[in-house]
Figure (cartoon, rainbow, N blue to C red):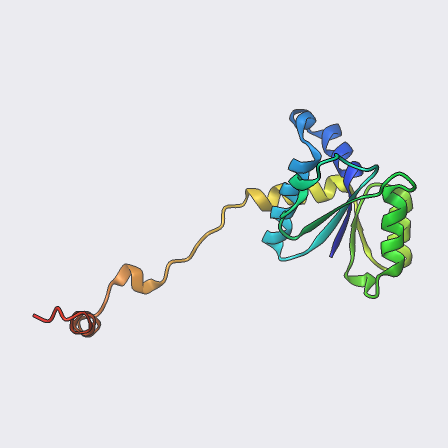
Length: 158
């Protein structure tokens, strides 16, 4: 399970990737969702503030729950609370370059990954081409007996 500091990750991406200045929080969530689905993991991403009034764009992002801290608190506090409350912290991966969150993760023996390291790994994984192995039978074709069976099955016997 990944818990991601949303604005920290966005800031980290924009700092390093010059062309990513226009990446939005929604685009980021969709990319992270694709990555999590690819690696077979689930995650939560927490942003500071209340977010946009219409949050429907954040619905149906695979493998990722999107949360906004609201007005009375911040994303770091919510993530810290999630780390403290988790019953299996060794299974958590906290994504943030924030020392406070990395220390909170370390105290509960959760894994902490800096935002830039996470982003680099995500990009590397998503850019890999998935090789689909074809069954050997596809190249070899059907045997004579299999061909005869199918012809009989469809009533096309010769």
